[in-house]
Length: 256
Length: 342
Image 1 (cartoon, chains in turn red, green):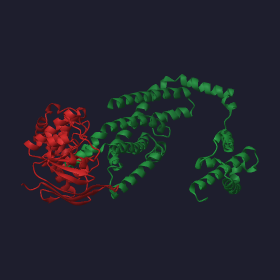
Image 2 (tube, one colour):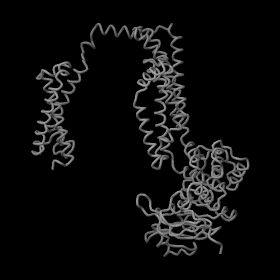
Image 3 (cartoon, helix red, strand yellow):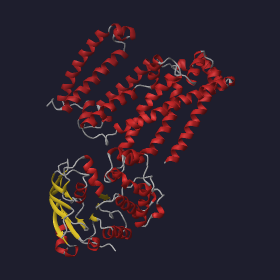
């Protein structure tokens, strides 16, 4: 087995309000995986992903990325980590009123000096790269449209292109399809799988629907009240496990 | 018991009200020789103050008793749960009497007089004035137009120079960007300075600057500039505080530096509302520049005060007409532009 690309050891996160969002979370992520994180809203999925790229500072515990400890990293080092661990969001978080192409080029900010980026002096090869990524996610025709005029599914594909523009080793996807309709939802998940399988980028993705988990995930991690309650293969989630993860009242719904 | 803050407030409120109504009644009935007119009041201020203090002491004693007797005073309605509707209680009547006496006192204080308002001579004077205003002396039109152009340029420069300064200051005046102890202290200091600057009327700034750089359009422009910087910084920073955090997180997670996060995450979200606020500010500044001209800030205001001082109402009529047209045009134009930017 390959060496893990990310290792998390006894990670804790306590919010200033005193809420403990993560309790002693430990797991490994292997290169090329499509790791899915499931759990109820508020179970700590977002907090976990945001600790990995240091949008949030862990309260205690250790995080290793390619055997380098990153949970205490500061300044330039944090920015270098973020460049390699790209993130996509539930609400896409594109920059409004800017073109699709400009939004994709934002992925280059981590590798562009401030003065050059302020003047919008992106290199021709960067623009070409951005265009080819838009082709990859099937919306090269929209490159010069305003990003906020696109549909939800198209916006999320722009966000994937922006993430890829960072040349990341890992993509952290925080509920990427939770605000999309079922049909668009599959198309976005298909692009994420394509990125995972064809470009070999490791994906860590939080999801709500178990049917999507079974279809796309290579491994599953379940959080409940900030603790890992299940780790294994998607096919191995039995009705008993389902109740353990989501509570006795829960019933599974399907997305087709 | 009396230490309870609401009971304390109740007695304090009732005592102040009782002292005030006692003084009003004494004055209205002409019972005190010291409160007959302004001069005697000023000369006998110390006596009046001692009397007021004694009355207040008595009022406290009475109101503490009323409180102990569980009487529904006005303060009880304000700070405690009342038992009877105010309109059917003794307090209601009491408050009504105080209100009527206050209206009477303010009528006397403003020298209000129906006789003067309907006075034949005054009536004729006003009619002459209005008739002159309505028949403007159009020979003053060229000069008025030239002066109003100066006013528009004063307003334009005052706004234009304020924009880049306010643009930079706004980031430091936005709470969501100024995190950490040093940044937050700077934020508080800047906000305080801006609030003080904004609370001083541009009219006062114009007087200060006309002493500093001499009477004229430059002083007017500087006054508008200072006021515009303070106002625009506040409006801009409120827009920055209202930006959605999502895009900022997205820019941050590409590995961007803080200045890149501001430039690519914050600025695109605020630039259009910035333009709308700026045009509106220019519109306000044109009107303000006119008023500033009255105290020597140059432009059409200075022209206006010159003819008004000589009671040349036909000329004033021409100037007012020019101002009205410009204000109406600016108002309409800025409304269209702001609508188009939405």
